[in-house]
Length: 102
Image 1: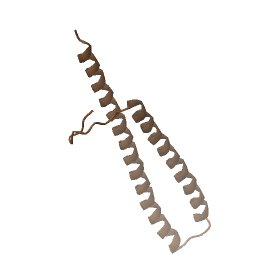
Image 2: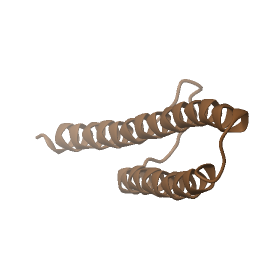
Image 3: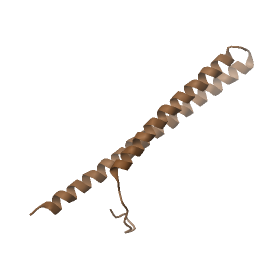
Image 4: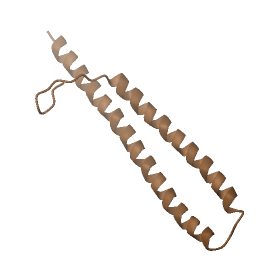
């Protein structure tokens, strides 16, 4: 394929799909690790009360939103990588069909 600058590059849609799957696995691992940390912190949080508890809860809300945003971006990237593989494969199949015509 050629990019706008005229350079050539190679596309391997199987590798793209494998990369997208790896992103999905990584998101699952991220969720798991965040869940583990959250459980540990909640156990610790249960041992004290007062102003520090409220500050923690406010921060936890921010962390939860940030973690959700990171996960969302990763999942969007996963979809985009899969879509790029679909586009590359479709273009190649169209080329094969066009060249194969008599």
